[in-house]
Length: 247
Image (cartoon, rainbow, N blue to C red; front, side, top):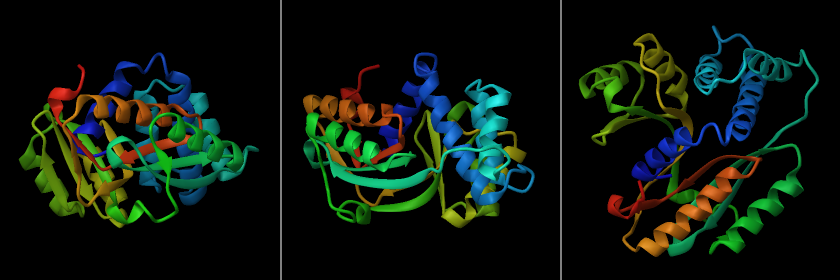
């Protein structure tokens, strides 16, 4: 999701982590498997895997689950074949939405995503209709009490970061996809653990929403999409007035 919305979503996820632990473990497990499949199972030589292991441990994912997910990716253990899919659509207020899916059943995933859009004020779009409004970048969200802007700027300059955005209660650091692993390793070396580290879809421009009813409908749709078992991530191009967000 866009700036404030993404940070608010991250904090909400932390607040309900116990209630949704099964979903969180499933998401991380798939990420671990795919990352190990694409870059190898040794975190020393696969920085993205190392970042995910830190994320898994922060969510209190059991070590056995982490190891099993990695071994499925390397082929040491049998596992399902995951497909990575992208769905695009529009939500309340005409907000563009991108949904990242990792699934072993394409038909199920498509049906669930389409149904969630249609039942909650949105609709799926044709491939490419929404994606061109976004740029694929590395994105790190870091609580302000973990570091300071000068330190992040120094790390970003040395490790390929393009932008450090100060949002008062948190920082957002962006980088090209090719520099994600370098920046992730640099943050780790500095002892800074991001609250969120991902390859994200960043909107080139945002659409302000100043109507509370539209905000509530949009958040309900994006939250329900995010809760689907096959959904890994949800991004949108909204800019929500913070006063309209419930604490």
